[in-house]
Image 1 (spheres, one colour):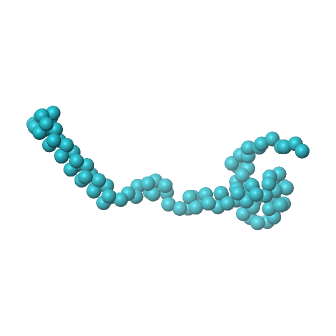
Image 2 (image 1 turned 45 degrees about the horizontal axis):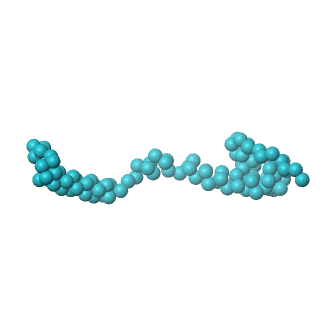
Length: 101
């Protein structure tokens, strides 16, 4: 038995097949025969399409990235400021930094 060479389907083709599967007019077996792909592949593309559709109607990714914990950031700034002041004082006492700052 010879193996068929690996095929790379375009995104357009995958979307077309997945949308046909979502319609439900034909069974997976019929779609697999029509488009010459395995029914498991159609199921995978259909699932990926459904999961990706959430991004179309969901929140923007930019808005999600902007949401930050301001309190945590302010605490970190305070901690770093304290460390800098301590190290500056230590350097001045050691004579490695002038006290004119």
